[in-house]
Length: 243
Image 1 (cartoon, rainbow, N blue to C red):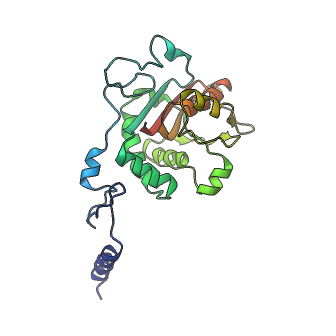
Image 2 (cartoon, rainbow, N blue to C red):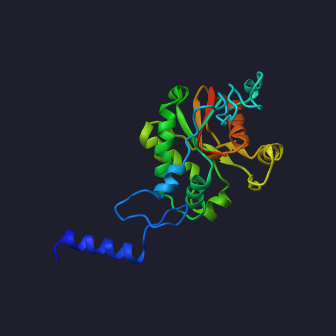
């Protein structure tokens, strides 16, 4: 049998019995369509842009320059000086990030990295950074999951923007999930949960923290604090989603 005919027959067979479906709604996706979502769900993805806080990137429904937590000079108190996210956390984007993290569809990292690269190019403050720094997860969680989603995002983004990944931040204790916690509780939960690897030198360097989701920014801020206290010149952050 001709090889091309064989491959076509194989693909049709696989699609018949193991069809590609939308990660959000479960609808079948045509074999010829490489998208992760059906057309309807894809159109629901919302880029995090336009009216957003100048420091933390939070969408501002009523406009303005800064959100409540950054306005009136409060932005200067933060160690993480600039945060941007590529997509708003909604039903389709949540489905993709959950499939990526918890169902081990790790190739989704390439989809998010492409969007993060677009956000990176649109924001000149990132251009002076020396390294990408993935937010670490605890070794116990790493064993359970098999990978750190932030590291995979950083690795894929590095291929696109040429900025080296510097994985020298570690998680020193396993914290409770931030999902159900409020702003103050998140800050307390994550306090002193990170450290630099022994012998790591960050003096005078600028870092872009990479993570999957930013909600209150508490985790990013704690990572930034450790880096700044050890001499980092500047710490910025870029995430796939903004909740």
